[in-house]
Image (cartoon, rainbow, N blue to C red; front, top):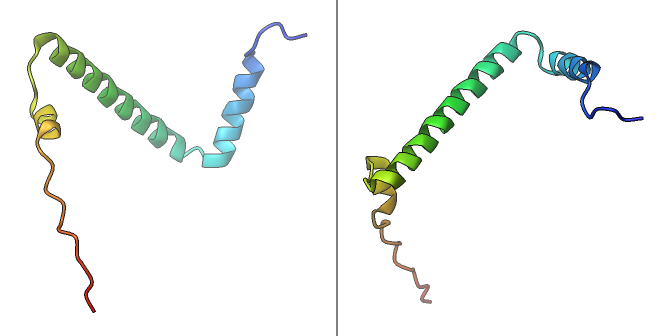
Length: 79
């Protein structure tokens, strides 16, 4: 019955549904945005891995480790 989980005609159906939903004009922009996001994620993962190996702290990691701003004082209601 089920020889393979994903056959070529499945991909064609998915592509047709995507084109019908989003239109052919928006798909290249969406793919470009997804590619940029994946490149950013990949570079950040490399930076985290390098920071862990070197023991150095980058500016973004230093700001994350900084003390948070003090919470505003609680207001009391007096009648």
